[in-house]
Image (tube, rainbow, N blue to C red; front, side):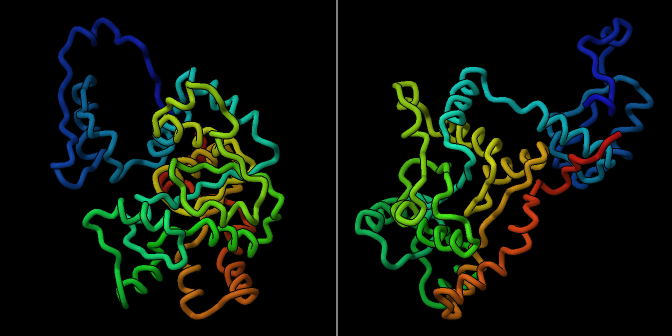
Length: 303
Protein backbone atom coordinates (compact mmCIF):
# COMPACT_ATOMS: atom_id res chain seq x y z
CA UNK A 1 0.00 0.00 0.00
CA UNK A 2 3.08 2.19 -0.18
CA UNK A 3 2.28 5.42 -1.97
CA UNK A 4 -1.39 5.36 -1.03
CA UNK A 5 -1.59 5.58 2.77
CA UNK A 6 0.77 5.61 5.73
CA UNK A 7 0.69 2.38 7.72
CA UNK A 8 1.96 2.31 11.32
CA UNK A 9 2.58 -0.73 13.50
CA UNK A 10 1.62 1.04 16.74
CA UNK A 11 -0.79 3.87 17.46
CA UNK A 12 0.58 7.08 18.96
CA UNK A 13 -0.06 7.21 22.75
CA UNK A 14 -2.48 10.14 22.47
CA UNK A 15 -4.62 8.08 20.10
CA UNK A 16 -4.23 4.66 21.70
CA UNK A 17 -5.69 5.89 25.00
CA UNK A 18 -8.95 6.93 23.34
CA UNK A 19 -11.92 4.75 22.44
CA UNK A 20 -12.41 4.69 18.66
CA UNK A 21 -15.66 5.86 17.14
CA UNK A 22 -17.41 2.83 15.63
CA UNK A 23 -18.68 3.09 12.05
CA UNK A 24 -21.15 0.43 10.95
CA UNK A 25 -20.43 -0.58 7.34
CA UNK A 26 -22.27 -3.89 7.35
CA UNK A 27 -24.13 -5.10 4.28
CA UNK A 28 -27.52 -4.78 5.94
CA UNK A 29 -27.23 -1.00 5.65
CA UNK A 30 -27.92 -1.28 1.92
CA UNK A 31 -26.05 0.77 -0.67
CA UNK A 32 -22.80 1.93 0.83
CA UNK A 33 -21.02 5.20 0.14
CA UNK A 34 -17.51 5.63 1.54
CA UNK A 35 -17.48 9.39 1.05
CA UNK A 36 -20.80 9.93 2.81
CA UNK A 37 -20.67 7.20 5.46
CA UNK A 38 -17.05 6.92 6.58
CA UNK A 39 -15.09 10.03 5.66
CA UNK A 40 -17.17 12.47 7.78
CA UNK A 41 -16.60 10.32 10.89
CA UNK A 42 -12.89 10.01 10.13
CA UNK A 43 -12.53 13.78 9.74
CA UNK A 44 -14.53 14.48 12.90
CA UNK A 45 -13.15 11.87 15.29
CA UNK A 46 -9.73 11.19 13.69
CA UNK A 47 -9.81 7.69 15.19
CA UNK A 48 -12.45 5.23 14.00
CA UNK A 49 -13.01 1.50 13.78
CA UNK A 50 -15.00 -0.13 11.01
CA UNK A 51 -16.76 -3.47 10.87
CA UNK A 52 -15.03 -6.38 9.07
CA UNK A 53 -17.65 -6.19 6.33
CA UNK A 54 -15.99 -2.96 5.23
CA UNK A 55 -13.57 -5.06 3.20
CA UNK A 56 -16.51 -6.28 1.12
CA UNK A 57 -17.95 -2.85 0.33
CA UNK A 58 -16.67 -1.37 -2.92
CA UNK A 59 -19.76 0.46 -4.13
CA UNK A 60 -18.03 3.79 -4.63
CA UNK A 61 -14.34 3.34 -3.86
CA UNK A 62 -12.20 6.05 -5.46
CA UNK A 63 -9.84 4.74 -8.14
CA UNK A 64 -6.77 4.97 -5.91
CA UNK A 65 -8.58 3.08 -3.13
CA UNK A 66 -9.42 0.25 -5.53
CA UNK A 67 -5.82 0.19 -6.68
CA UNK A 68 -4.57 0.09 -3.10
CA UNK A 69 -6.94 -2.75 -2.22
CA UNK A 70 -5.92 -4.77 -5.27
CA UNK A 71 -2.19 -4.27 -4.83
CA UNK A 72 -2.35 -4.96 -1.11
CA UNK A 73 -4.27 -8.22 -1.58
CA UNK A 74 -2.27 -9.63 -4.45
CA UNK A 75 1.04 -8.28 -3.23
CA UNK A 76 0.64 -9.93 0.17
CA UNK A 77 -0.78 -13.28 -0.95
CA UNK A 78 1.64 -16.05 0.06
CA UNK A 79 1.66 -19.77 0.65
CA UNK A 80 3.08 -21.08 3.90
CA UNK A 81 6.85 -21.53 3.82
CA UNK A 82 6.65 -25.33 3.82
CA UNK A 83 4.01 -25.41 1.10
CA UNK A 84 5.85 -22.88 -1.05
CA UNK A 85 9.00 -25.01 -0.84
CA UNK A 86 7.02 -28.04 -2.00
CA UNK A 87 5.41 -25.99 -4.78
CA UNK A 88 8.81 -24.67 -5.90
CA UNK A 89 10.10 -28.25 -5.99
CA UNK A 90 7.15 -29.21 -8.18
CA UNK A 91 7.68 -26.23 -10.49
CA UNK A 92 11.35 -27.10 -10.89
CA UNK A 93 10.49 -30.68 -11.91
CA UNK A 94 8.17 -29.68 -14.77
CA UNK A 95 9.79 -29.69 -18.24
CA UNK A 96 10.10 -26.16 -19.63
CA UNK A 97 8.52 -24.30 -21.29
CA UNK A 98 5.11 -25.55 -20.29
CA UNK A 99 1.40 -24.87 -20.35
CA UNK A 100 -0.66 -25.25 -17.17
CA UNK A 101 -4.11 -26.66 -17.93
CA UNK A 102 -6.88 -26.40 -15.36
CA UNK A 103 -9.19 -29.18 -16.49
CA UNK A 104 -12.49 -29.80 -14.69
CA UNK A 105 -14.13 -33.13 -15.47
CA UNK A 106 -14.52 -34.83 -12.11
CA UNK A 107 -17.67 -36.84 -11.25
CA UNK A 108 -19.04 -34.24 -8.82
CA UNK A 109 -18.39 -31.43 -11.30
CA UNK A 110 -20.28 -33.22 -14.08
CA UNK A 111 -23.07 -34.27 -11.72
CA UNK A 112 -23.50 -30.70 -10.48
CA UNK A 113 -23.70 -29.39 -14.06
CA UNK A 114 -26.72 -31.64 -14.76
CA UNK A 115 -25.31 -32.42 -18.20
CA UNK A 116 -25.18 -35.77 -19.96
CA UNK A 117 -22.38 -37.03 -22.19
CA UNK A 118 -22.77 -39.85 -24.71
CA UNK A 119 -19.85 -42.19 -25.21
CA UNK A 120 -18.37 -42.11 -21.71
CA UNK A 121 -16.82 -45.25 -20.28
CA UNK A 122 -18.95 -47.40 -17.93
CA UNK A 123 -16.66 -46.43 -15.03
CA UNK A 124 -17.20 -42.71 -15.69
CA UNK A 125 -20.97 -43.14 -15.98
CA UNK A 126 -21.06 -45.06 -12.71
CA UNK A 127 -18.98 -42.41 -10.92
CA UNK A 128 -21.23 -39.61 -12.19
CA UNK A 129 -24.42 -41.41 -11.16
CA UNK A 130 -22.98 -41.99 -7.69
CA UNK A 131 -22.33 -38.25 -7.36
CA UNK A 132 -25.64 -37.00 -8.77
CA UNK A 133 -27.88 -37.36 -5.73
CA UNK A 134 -31.07 -35.39 -6.42
CA UNK A 135 -29.55 -33.39 -9.28
CA UNK A 136 -30.96 -35.24 -12.26
CA UNK A 137 -29.66 -34.35 -15.74
CA UNK A 138 -31.63 -32.05 -18.01
CA UNK A 139 -33.37 -33.68 -20.95
CA UNK A 140 -34.83 -32.65 -24.29
CA UNK A 141 -34.92 -28.97 -25.23
CA UNK A 142 -33.89 -27.89 -21.73
CA UNK A 143 -30.70 -29.94 -22.06
CA UNK A 144 -29.86 -28.36 -25.43
CA UNK A 145 -30.52 -24.85 -24.13
CA UNK A 146 -28.44 -25.50 -21.00
CA UNK A 147 -25.51 -26.82 -23.03
CA UNK A 148 -25.67 -23.96 -25.54
CA UNK A 149 -25.43 -21.51 -22.64
CA UNK A 150 -22.00 -22.98 -21.89
CA UNK A 151 -23.02 -24.74 -18.68
CA UNK A 152 -21.49 -28.13 -19.48
CA UNK A 153 -17.82 -28.83 -18.62
CA UNK A 154 -15.53 -29.66 -21.51
CA UNK A 155 -14.35 -33.26 -21.64
CA UNK A 156 -10.61 -33.98 -21.98
CA UNK A 157 -11.27 -35.08 -25.56
CA UNK A 158 -13.11 -31.83 -26.38
CA UNK A 159 -10.28 -29.87 -24.77
CA UNK A 160 -7.72 -31.64 -26.94
CA UNK A 161 -9.82 -30.89 -30.03
CA UNK A 162 -9.92 -27.16 -29.21
CA UNK A 163 -6.16 -27.20 -28.58
CA UNK A 164 -5.67 -28.62 -32.06
CA UNK A 165 -8.01 -25.98 -33.49
CA UNK A 166 -5.76 -23.35 -31.89
CA UNK A 167 -2.69 -25.02 -33.45
CA UNK A 168 -1.16 -25.85 -30.08
CA UNK A 169 1.54 -28.43 -30.91
CA UNK A 170 0.82 -31.95 -29.72
CA UNK A 171 4.31 -32.18 -28.18
CA UNK A 172 3.62 -29.23 -25.85
CA UNK A 173 4.59 -29.82 -22.23
CA UNK A 174 1.33 -29.70 -20.28
CA UNK A 175 1.02 -29.61 -16.51
CA UNK A 176 -2.38 -30.93 -15.51
CA UNK A 177 -3.79 -28.73 -12.75
CA UNK A 178 -6.72 -30.86 -11.70
CA UNK A 179 -8.29 -32.49 -8.69
CA UNK A 180 -8.47 -36.17 -7.87
CA UNK A 181 -10.79 -38.39 -9.87
CA UNK A 182 -10.45 -36.71 -13.26
CA UNK A 183 -12.35 -38.81 -15.80
CA UNK A 184 -11.67 -39.69 -19.45
CA UNK A 185 -8.15 -38.25 -19.27
CA UNK A 186 -6.95 -40.56 -22.05
CA UNK A 187 -8.95 -38.40 -24.43
CA UNK A 188 -6.32 -35.71 -23.85
CA UNK A 189 -3.23 -37.87 -23.30
CA UNK A 190 -3.74 -39.89 -26.47
CA UNK A 191 -3.22 -36.68 -28.49
CA UNK A 192 -1.05 -34.55 -26.21
CA UNK A 193 1.52 -37.03 -24.98
CA UNK A 194 3.68 -34.76 -22.79
CA UNK A 195 1.18 -34.41 -19.95
CA UNK A 196 2.57 -34.40 -16.41
CA UNK A 197 0.80 -34.41 -13.04
CA UNK A 198 1.83 -33.49 -9.52
CA UNK A 199 1.30 -37.07 -8.35
CA UNK A 200 3.88 -38.27 -10.89
CA UNK A 201 6.42 -35.53 -10.15
CA UNK A 202 6.24 -35.50 -6.36
CA UNK A 203 6.78 -38.45 -4.10
CA UNK A 204 6.75 -39.19 -0.42
CA UNK A 205 4.13 -39.61 2.27
CA UNK A 206 3.77 -35.85 2.70
CA UNK A 207 2.22 -35.62 -0.76
CA UNK A 208 0.10 -38.73 -0.37
CA UNK A 209 -1.34 -37.33 2.86
CA UNK A 210 -2.08 -33.88 1.45
CA UNK A 211 -5.65 -32.61 1.62
CA UNK A 212 -7.44 -31.43 -1.51
CA UNK A 213 -7.01 -27.74 -0.66
CA UNK A 214 -3.27 -28.21 -0.24
CA UNK A 215 -3.01 -29.89 -3.63
CA UNK A 216 -5.03 -27.04 -5.13
CA UNK A 217 -2.52 -24.59 -3.64
CA UNK A 218 0.27 -26.43 -5.49
CA UNK A 219 -1.71 -26.11 -8.72
CA UNK A 220 -2.22 -22.41 -8.03
CA UNK A 221 1.50 -21.79 -7.49
CA UNK A 222 2.50 -23.67 -10.63
CA UNK A 223 -0.22 -21.97 -12.69
CA UNK A 224 0.74 -18.41 -11.75
CA UNK A 225 4.33 -19.21 -12.71
CA UNK A 226 3.65 -21.16 -15.91
CA UNK A 227 4.53 -19.94 -19.39
CA UNK A 228 0.90 -20.31 -20.46
CA UNK A 229 -2.31 -20.89 -18.53
CA UNK A 230 -5.45 -22.38 -20.06
CA UNK A 231 -8.68 -23.10 -18.19
CA UNK A 232 -11.73 -25.04 -19.29
CA UNK A 233 -13.86 -23.35 -16.63
CA UNK A 234 -14.10 -19.93 -14.98
CA UNK A 235 -14.30 -20.77 -11.30
CA UNK A 236 -12.65 -19.18 -8.27
CA UNK A 237 -9.31 -20.87 -8.95
CA UNK A 238 -9.25 -19.57 -12.52
CA UNK A 239 -10.20 -16.04 -11.49
CA UNK A 240 -7.45 -15.96 -8.88
CA UNK A 241 -4.82 -17.35 -11.24
CA UNK A 242 -5.79 -15.00 -14.08
CA UNK A 243 -5.77 -11.95 -11.81
CA UNK A 244 -2.42 -12.85 -10.24
CA UNK A 245 -0.89 -13.49 -13.65
CA UNK A 246 -2.16 -10.10 -14.82
CA UNK A 247 -0.75 -8.51 -11.66
CA UNK A 248 2.63 -10.12 -12.40
CA UNK A 249 2.52 -9.13 -16.07
CA UNK A 250 2.06 -12.71 -17.32
CA UNK A 251 -0.73 -12.32 -19.85
CA UNK A 252 -0.60 -15.64 -21.73
CA UNK A 253 -3.89 -16.72 -20.21
CA UNK A 254 -6.85 -18.24 -22.05
CA UNK A 255 -10.31 -19.46 -21.08
CA UNK A 256 -11.75 -22.01 -23.48
CA UNK A 257 -15.31 -21.21 -24.53
CA UNK A 258 -17.74 -23.95 -23.57
CA UNK A 259 -20.54 -21.94 -25.12
CA UNK A 260 -18.80 -21.63 -28.49
CA UNK A 261 -18.07 -25.35 -28.59
CA UNK A 262 -21.66 -26.24 -27.71
CA UNK A 263 -23.26 -23.81 -30.16
CA UNK A 264 -21.01 -24.84 -33.04
CA UNK A 265 -21.46 -28.57 -32.53
CA UNK A 266 -25.24 -28.12 -32.15
CA UNK A 267 -25.20 -26.67 -35.68
CA UNK A 268 -23.68 -29.89 -36.95
CA UNK A 269 -20.15 -28.62 -37.49
CA UNK A 270 -17.32 -31.13 -37.18
CA UNK A 271 -13.82 -31.86 -38.44
CA UNK A 272 -11.89 -29.05 -40.12
CA UNK A 273 -14.99 -26.86 -40.36
CA UNK A 274 -15.46 -27.04 -36.59
CA UNK A 275 -11.75 -26.37 -36.00
CA UNK A 276 -11.86 -23.24 -38.14
CA UNK A 277 -14.96 -21.97 -36.34
CA UNK A 278 -13.36 -22.63 -32.93
CA UNK A 279 -10.23 -20.75 -33.99
CA UNK A 280 -12.36 -17.75 -34.95
CA UNK A 281 -14.26 -17.96 -31.64
CA UNK A 282 -11.01 -17.86 -29.63
CA UNK A 283 -8.88 -15.84 -32.05
CA UNK A 284 -8.88 -12.46 -30.29
CA UNK A 285 -8.20 -13.79 -26.78
CA UNK A 286 -5.67 -16.35 -28.03
CA UNK A 287 -3.77 -13.91 -30.24
CA UNK A 288 -3.75 -11.05 -27.73
CA UNK A 289 -3.02 -13.26 -24.73
CA UNK A 290 -4.24 -10.58 -22.35
CA UNK A 291 -5.74 -12.85 -19.74
CA UNK A 292 -8.75 -11.87 -17.67
CA UNK A 293 -8.14 -10.02 -14.41
CA UNK A 294 -10.87 -9.59 -11.86
CA UNK A 295 -13.25 -6.70 -12.61
CA UNK A 296 -12.67 -3.44 -10.72
CA UNK A 297 -9.11 -4.49 -9.93
CA UNK A 298 -7.01 -1.58 -11.09
CA UNK A 299 -3.63 -3.20 -10.72
CA UNK A 300 -2.04 -0.99 -13.38
CA UNK A 301 -2.83 2.21 -11.51
CA UNK A 302 0.24 4.03 -10.20
CA UNK A 303 0.32 6.99 -7.88
